[in-house]
Length: 103
Image (cartoon, rainbow, N blue to C red; front, side):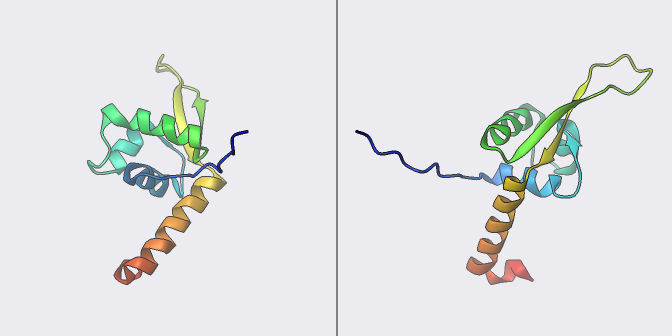
């Protein structure tokens, strides 16, 4: 019989950036790109968001399009409790390893 291994949760630099940007507010994908000041690209943000949703770090929901615009609904993203814990664990760990980050 095979042994089951606990799932190891990882977080990439782009995922950490998304968690940081979503800490205080829900945002759309293109808002995340704009808020990242060039660190997230339009071509990769949705791949990153999808991966993060699979890991349970964020959640998303379809938001109604602005009235009178005739546009499509947009997906809005929010951080989950697990995502908050991952961000806090990483930032507190980084402060232990690199003390000047905590200043």
